[in-house]
Length: 315
Image 1 (cartoon, rainbow, N blue to C red):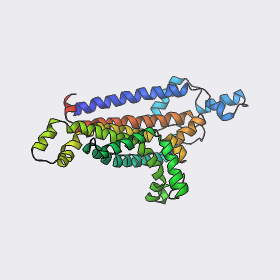
Image 2: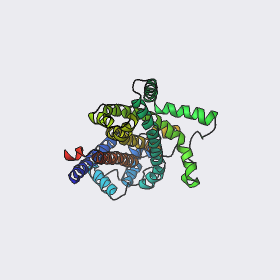
Image 3: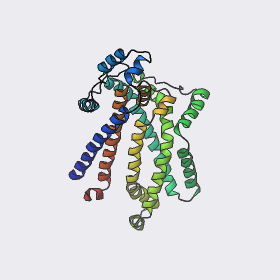
Image 4: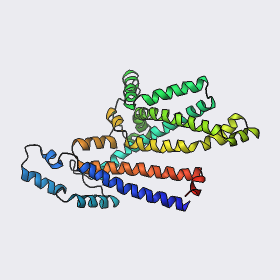
C-alpha cells in the first residue's frame, strides 16, 4: 500500500508542475495587456509603463512564473490588478459559495442516482428499467443551464418558493444559505445524476453475471440479499471514478450556473477576472481548481486500493 501511495503522490506532484506551466503559458500568451486595459485606449505610454512596473509585468516571464509558483507554495496568491486586494482573500470569500454548492449538488446527485441505478439493474428489461433509462437519457441530453432557467421559471417566478438569484450568506443561518443554493444545486445535480445512474446500472449488471453472485444465490441468499451484500459493493469502483470526476466538474465547471443565479462563487470570479484582464486572479483560481481536480483524483485512486486490494498487488 505504501508503494502504491508513493507512486500516486509522485504522479500528483508531476501533474501539478505541468499544469502550472501550461496555465501560465496559456494565460500569458492571451492577447491584451492588463495595464493598457485598465488605463484605457487614451492612456499615455509612460503611464502604461509605470503601471506595468507597479504590477510586475515588466520582468521576464520566466522570473514571473517562478515567483508566482514559489509564492503559491507559501500561500501567497498575489494581489489583484483590478481590486488591489489579496487574491487569496478573494478566493476564500468565493470558496464559501462554490465549495458548499459543489458538495450540495454532489450529495443530491448521489442520492438520486444510486437508488435509480440499483432499481434499474434489479429490473433489467422491465418497464421500470426502461423508464429510468429514458429519464436518464433526457437528463444527459438537456444542458444544466436549461434546467436552471426552468427552475427559476417554475419555483421562483410562478411558485415563489425560492429567490431567482443571489446568495443570502451563511451569517443568516445554515438553512437560509442552503435555501439560496438549492435551485443551483438541483440544476447542477440532475445531469450528473443521470450519468451516475447509468454507470451504476451498467456496473451492477456486470457484477450480477459473475460466478460469485451465482454462488451466493446457491448458498441460500435471496436475489435482494445477494444484490445488496455482494453486488453493490463490487460495482462501486467505476462509480467512484464518476463521483470523483463529478465533484471536480461541479467545483470547477459551474461558471454558467453561477452566472444564471448570480452567485458570488469562484466561477463568477474567473469570469469577471477574464473580462477585466486580471491575469493574476485567473492564473491563481484556475491553478487552485486544477489542484482540487488532481487531489480528488488522487483520493479516488487511494479509495480504489481500499475497495479492491487487487490494485495494490499490481503496483
